[in-house]
Length: 451
Image (cartoon, rainbow, N blue to C red; front, side):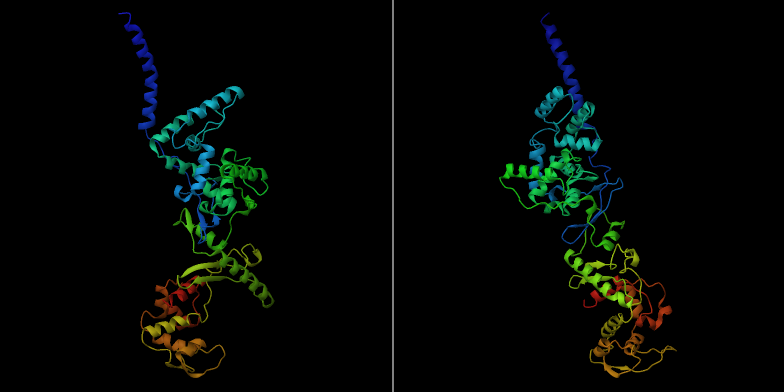
């Protein structure tokens, strides 16, 4: 009978040990686990056609945080982070017992909590807003890291890390760091740039990338050389907080405020053509000052694809003297004679003319409306193609009056023109610029005519 008592004691001790373990496992495995990024808001970033950022918006909590998928991050960057931060990431269940033991010994000697955190633990800390120097918070990290591993795959946890890791100031996530500090997408980072960013999350305040942070660049270069045997000697170009991407400001600012857009928006803007357009526009406005021209706007459309490749709403976005922040491509102005090609296109489509049809450039009255040409002269009979090329008013008005419904007004409405008044209000004056239109409406019309 006495021999049974030790066994019962051993069983009782085992139960006392196993019950908390089983309870913890049941909590981790079977209770709901919110996604680490649940509730996080992400910046809207407007990019050019090559994916380079033109403008980055702040989140509601004043962060630069850009959603990125794991497959969009270079494998070299992923491997480097795992090697540097958590080399047993793919094997451990959320915590690394050996690392925690080393950290515990260091804490016992130094009196503070340090190190030992796996990538999963870091995700747990960031998701729960835990402190790094608190024993209580370290235990919570361990518990929630184990729980995260029960509910999410390694790839999902790694993706969370790359979206949540701190990179100095209000920059969070690798994509935001790549775009803020290097003005490029993560997929375009060089090995040296990836190394620099890999070092930042451990101490984001001290290691925030900047042109003057030579120690960070040197540390990254030494690490790259130790790992690969190679070292990039070209100096890194790091952009500061005051050098945020700010290209094509009128369009990128407009896209930032569009409620129907979110995340990363790839525009059709070609950065090289955008820069050239802005330079030409600035020079054009400078030459025109002597005759009273101080501002201008321009829109460049690639005809085969009907894509907007460059847009400048003014000759100087920051020039308050010309109200440079107003987008001239959206302002309503008289189109002059620029609608005449649409009249001839409709007339051709309706079989009223062909290019060699003779048209009369002669005085004519339209219900009391007596138009003239810009030179106050009349040339008599002209071929249709010549009348259009010379921009003669009377032939265009005559054709417009002969068009079958929907006529010029209806055609332009269908093409996207947002007229403020009715067709009856404008009458034939629409032909000669009597209704105000925007440059964007006009560019869309011209791009569509050849098609």
